[in-house]
Image (tube, rainbow, N blue to C red; front, side):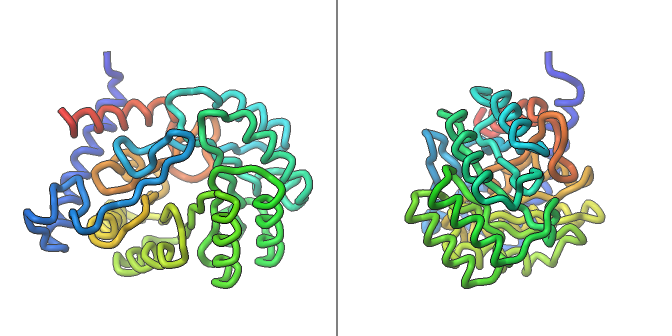
Length: 301
């Protein structure tokens, strides 16, 4: 029997998704030739990203669960817990939360250990800087050096690269990651507000120009209008410009619907939590997976 909480969450997601689709369709003046409401135009197909058999950008949004551990041993224990869980497709190793965050040798070793624990799930390695809501301050030069060490000596399936670390650094890290066959999630976070739709669209398109494999943006909403603006901007990028999978979310409790309704707006990934959240508004992975499945099945029934 469906849990009452799951029913309410899925109903909210479907309602919000319907609203944002109508708004986005009017904004972009979609025509029948552009395809259905849940598909990009035929002349702008989204390129999927496949890692370990996981197809990102197709079907139900893929679920990412982050670590929030303070030590390497705690991080590995959490990853062992997530390993093999069919509801979780990607595990994010949050380096900035660790007490060894700025120790290149120890971080590199940890990425190799973490990767070995995930034969069927993708490992996303992330150092979220203090400037973008993370736990550890680091200079752009240290950030670049740490990531270079991870790329060259560690192991990861995906690497989160912040788009505002400086264009030269970003382009160099993208090139190095791609040479090592590591996909790049390029990210931008605004913990203060939700920018205008034009700015959201511009940032995501800029990430694509910089070579990202996944385009990511997270914003802080102050009301429901902010949430719908982010979702509408996501749909605009998805339906008009994107050649890569998208990952967008409105943070905090007000933005939870954006984490649920990605299949309706073109967001191919979403974050859930097991225990402690790594960002405001995350919900339990088991609940999130259930709602994603409900929405996916409803859209294909």
